[in-house]
Length: 287
Image (cartoon, rainbow, N blue to C red):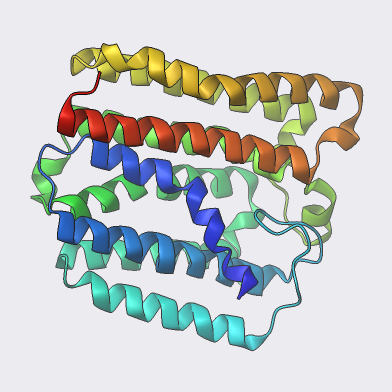
């Protein structure tokens, strides 16, 4: 069960909280159900299926020493997906269909006979879309079921883009310590293609674009008062990334699991705390 990597869902939580922080109306029953479905069933199932297909022996996200996998892991992912899809019908048919799309793309990403993850650009695009903007779309549907056509307003499209940019900025960094193990498995990651320096530069550019777009969004919605809080909370990860980049340029062995996980934890913790503050501010006007 370790391969389900439940704690890893913490790294995808900012997108759900972002959607919740921007909701004009909230159905708390469906919101809680949607949160449980995504973070305790769908994301762990995706992690487990990926581990089952990869059969990693070296460190992976959330597991420094992954145990050997068995067919029971595969059956666990089927069970989790079945529970998630059936439960999702209590929210809406649209939410259920979105889950099926997400599950399908997750399987195509990892499945040995198709294995979209072996193609660097395509794998990046899939993660960029489906762990970013698409999760924002699913979260929004669980928070307050909407008219699908009416959802795609300028603000919601910007929010989806911001979500994808933040996820996309971290994704290559999660691969930076796996270059050799991925290559042995026939996977050429976008981080491998970019190289060590290129990975940091590429991720930095995406992160900068995300912050700029977030500034534009906050300005459009008269929420610039929360920007200083956001900048303060992401400062630790910026400091860590800057120092880490300097060490990696001197010695590539510093592109390791520990530094990657530290970057993930700092980034996700800052984002989660910020969006939680934003949710509380929307409810009680704290700032």
